[in-house]
Image (cartoon, rainbow, N blue to C red; front, top):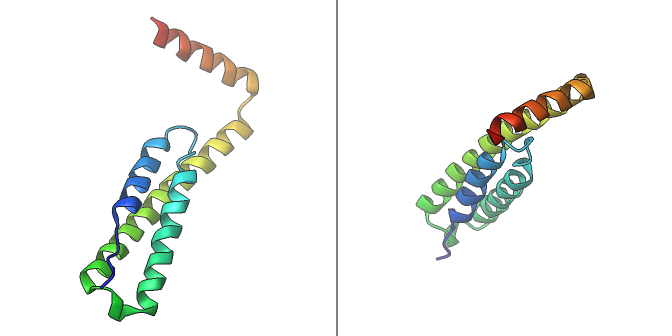
Length: 105
């Protein structure tokens, strides 16, 4: 019997949630985790006799977690794009400088 390992999916999805704060760039980590989980599930559904039912259920849960992480990162990425597109660049830079001065103190 083959084993479906969900560890990579959970690690990548969790990492993507941490990277979400960096302009939504966690989407670059969340998308591969979702695609890997989807590929493994299709493989398991094609040959169900090679995998245990518990492993398939665990992979479905990992795929759901990856999808949620992908959704959160996607929304945050779109919000950041919208914010950059609609905000005046000078205003953005002034706010950035003020935040940097706060962190330096």
